[in-house]
Image 1 (cartoon, helix red, strand yellow):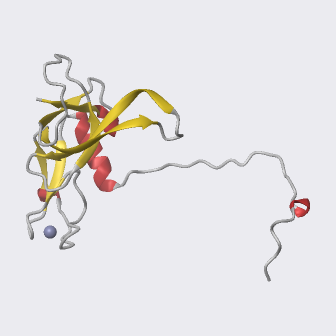
Image 2: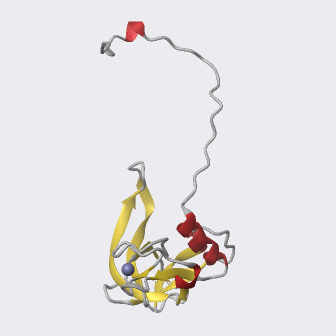
Length: 157
Ligand SMILES: [Zn+2]
């Protein structure tokens, strides 16, 4: 039997601590890719059956369901093509950003999938025009800990 949940008078408040902790994992494949970032590696997987290349690497092929083994992992260059991009003006809570962020969808060389990351202006400032089809290069942070933030962003080269 269903109870009427709309009557607030029937609810009781119990104060106290609720000691629950969580540990999230990104998953086996993504953790391997992120650990590769520490050594400036872009770890991908190539399917032996259909030749599709995934970056970031995966545990199995989403096309033919071939399971990948250790031999199917390869390191890609840190360069690719800008497929599309957009300017982000608000944060996750809807608050306007002081400085907009430009996000780009990048097809890393030899990969068949796309990778989303920030587009940043090069320090030299010689080529800061983001255009679809531009060749971009991933820039690494000096202090890398094995996360997506190990990549500073992508610059147009
Ligand atoms: Zn496949």
